Image 1 (cartoon, rainbow, N blue to C red):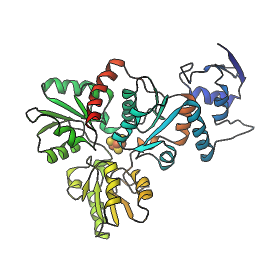
Image 2: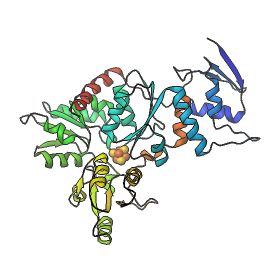
Image 3: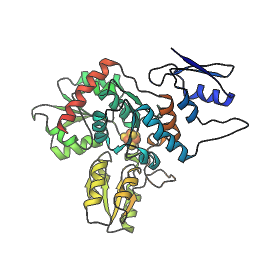
Image 4: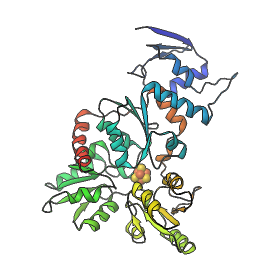
Length: 374
Ligand code: SF4
């Protein structure tokens, strides 16, 4: 295998060691070694993109890539690596703007399923990138920051969930997509907030149902379907922190405003809502409803697409109990992804999502059941 040795500045050498913890892998694995005397050895001619994309800096010639340069180079890397970027509505606007597809969990799973790209860069949180990998065992799935987790997914640790299912046998297990691959693998069928009601209605009426991990979405589905379900006690830390008092104050200031809310919100918020639905459903509602002012009770990132869709309407983020700079409800995990991390992930092929094949295959069965229902 041909190799090339390139002299490195100490700063560049440190950068490479920091951003490429796992050297010598697959399509992105051209990096063979970065030696202590400052030489980078690359295999298979992968050198040029590595050099062009790095935030090259050093005492004598400091250059940090600007946002414009990062965006340009991300587009170049996407072509070079045959990659697509899928982004959730809760991502930062600049990441949504360069994504090939922006959507909610259902739309993103469907987009991941139909792509022919070799690499999927998932600008979202860990369980979403896992979902893309479950549906694409042969493709590379990258997540810009492996620490981008989810309080809701974390509320159902696999070993506790296994014990819970063992204590309640013979029930149909419906899991919201916001859960780990291991929990998906223990489930009969997955749902998203777009199709949770439809999924539960598809289960024969004489079967008992376990719904996990979001108890508020589960309670909402119970109200919509009239089905009694055993609910796992999990919540999204962002949606449960939406402040009813501050929201009522806003409604007082804007008496004509309509409240739209995501079903991960607790019942006392949903009881005030004019429309309840997934992020895509909320986006559709503000477009087709004749109202002019809307208070939006979900993560604040959705406002970017809403403002583009209805520039003439007033959109106000429902405030959180916690004081924060955005005066909205912001998911700290979603906001871990940055342009620089997207760039680094495409450049280096890391961090990559890996799953045990037996877990992936079982989880895929539950996911595909959902996707057949749409
Ligand atoms: S908004 Fe809530 S459910 Fe969504 S990723 Fe953040 S913590 Fe998880």
